[in-house]
Image (cartoon, rainbow, N blue to C red; front, side, top):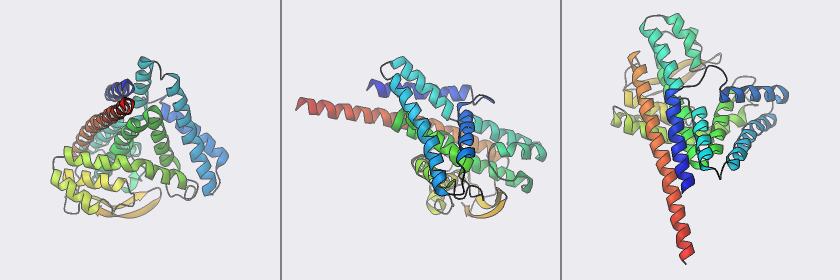
Length: 322
């Protein structure tokens, strides 16, 4: 039980660390992983699913294995174990940076400076900013805040509660690989297939928890639940759909539709079609909702880990008494 309490303390400290000191501009561990994965890609790349699968297993599996060895090395040192958990949670979470970048675009839009907004938008998503006007950029930011609340916060906390430090690291590695090679460009349609499919699997529990917590924390609970049920499956991404739909319903806005991404135009289904188009002010509302969802996710996952530990301890004591 002490191990689970140590995880809870470390997760809370890491979450607080992300609030106080967001991702540094240089020297971030996730950026270092990305550079290493890119180096491996340069050696392995072939227009073939098998090579892409090898790349995913080598990068994500190797990183998770290293994290497991590190966690094993400190398993008998409670203070070091808690510190490792805190440092890892801080490294894999990106909620504060997400809010910072969203507000930067929102501030530029509010000032009427579309050039600065277009310059900052790629920090949030891969859409072509030159093809977007002000309202379209506001929509892109709200959608990105919604999706990345799951990817950069809730999903990591879910896998951390389930698998400790290796779970945290594995989730972030898979999510980063998907961002790097998982899109449907000519180069990565086959090579990135394994990373995209693995990210879909890894992101499933976090996206559903994000949607549920959005219903709980949103300003329009009924709207969030209604949009999730009606439109969550309409999105081409099995994980972005529930999250973006619930955010759309909670904020009373309409998301989805036509977008330019990676040099191609996509016509996606509309989410919460009865809502109004997103305005600049909705960016701040989305950021605040994302923060509330993140806090609830921390409480939920920590409580779940503590409850599971208590249940296992009770079952173990019961077997001993027999």
